[in-house]
Length: 483
Image (cartoon, rainbow, N blue to C red; front, side, top):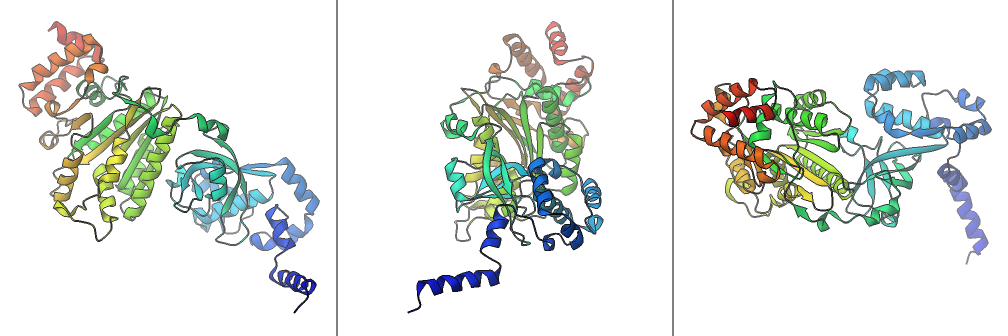
């Protein structure tokens, strides 16, 4: 039998040959990195810099990842050139970010990161970033071990910030969240006082989201009168192809950003064209809004992942007492994605739809509600009709009646180039008396009586003409009551 002392000696020698032991320990606590981790920097530059000077830099500097992620590719390339990164102007964005992040982490005292938490089925989590549309990205995401998640009772969707540890030097290694500092900007212990989303008491919307902003923007003014939107509304925008739903969504988004800065706006584009995503990002400005997208060239699993991240993030913000608005385009495509990812042995219904494929999309849409003790989640989702697809018809029929507000776009109006192509008689909001004053309500009812006897084209043309003659809806309703 080999003596214990001999075994220990052999293990120590084996660790030295493999580069383990003390070297690994020093690296874990932030020792001076070897030159091989920075191939773009000459070895002599590292040799000239002493360990003591490196340590002094670590004490003075702090590195924050979030501002770096918001930079455009040209800005990152210029930054890389200033830092001496070889081939910075030819590198992909992810690789360049990884070089810059690692370099700054090793010369800083403390490194901080912030992101939205996604917890995996195994129990560990990752901090995702809205600049990456919450997709998995090894160049910027930070890993949270299961023990850290359980220690602070963290859940998916929370905005977590903390101290980030550098990767171990291999190409596939991840950043590690070493310590949780805040959750939604507050001490993690304060999160225990928030009631879970499922325990909050839902009420009918009773505070209106006013959309009218300019006299010539009759689209939002008409929505305010025909289908008013309240905080906590669950609304469907029913639209055939090329009826102007995208423009209408953009106008609604711009109005919310401009008139309701207290609301956090999330625009979720599922299975969308890339140019539409760019158009939304340039058309809807503002700091208090997010545009999260998955394009049609991505797999259905990606559409599902981004939708789950958005709804979990929205729920966590509502638990904080905040007002959140989610604009989803479209719930039809989201339902298709869930259907495509359903098990192959599931029961097939009419139109090729799996029996339980709509359970999770309904859960997404059903999360919209106004909370009794503060906070609200408003969801406006587009539903596609007249697409010559039996599946789309079945999806719409399943969601029809689940909302408390509908805005129906008409193909006949769109073909006549009458905008907005809203079918007034088929559009409306449940419990609209909670959103209007008694005087406004009487005048809106009078307006509907007048327009109800006309066909949709005549009704919209008359309404648009009268609205152009008044500066706002208040003046329009006063003139209507007099006449």
